Each structure stands twice: as structure tokens, then as C-alpha cells.
Length: 82
Image 1 (cartoon, rainbow, N blue to C red):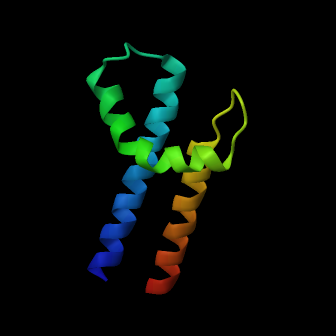
Image 2 (cartoon, rainbow, N blue to C red):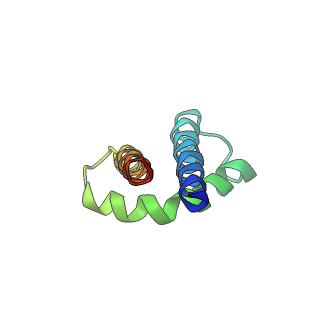
């Protein structure tokens, strides 16, 4: 079950990185901020395809959808291990 625990840890950390991206978008830091660029590089491969699924002009719901999908995966992994 070590793989399941590793997967859970990675998913939980990634959900925090998505939350950080949302918060950073509210604060609007300097665009060349290293932390911002790092967070964008980590989250954009997941958020970009989800953004295409929810094309609402002026409103980006992709972080919320990503977070929900991560929570679904976490529950599935936990149930499989139980």
C-alpha cells in the first residue's frame, strides 16, 4: 500500500498548489515572480484542458473542477485500500 500512500500525498500536495494558484491570482503579484511561475508551470498542464471543458468568459472554474477531481481520486484510492 506504499504506492497508494504516495499517490494520496501527491494528490493532496497538488490540491494545495492549485489553491496557491487561486490565491496568487487574487493577489496578482509581479508577473515574473519565481513562486508564481513555478506554480503556473505545475498547474497549467492540468488546468488548461479543464478550462476548455468549462468555457465561461471571464470566469475560470478549472481550479474548482481540478480540486473536485482530485478529491474524487483521493476517495477512490482510500476505498480501494480499505
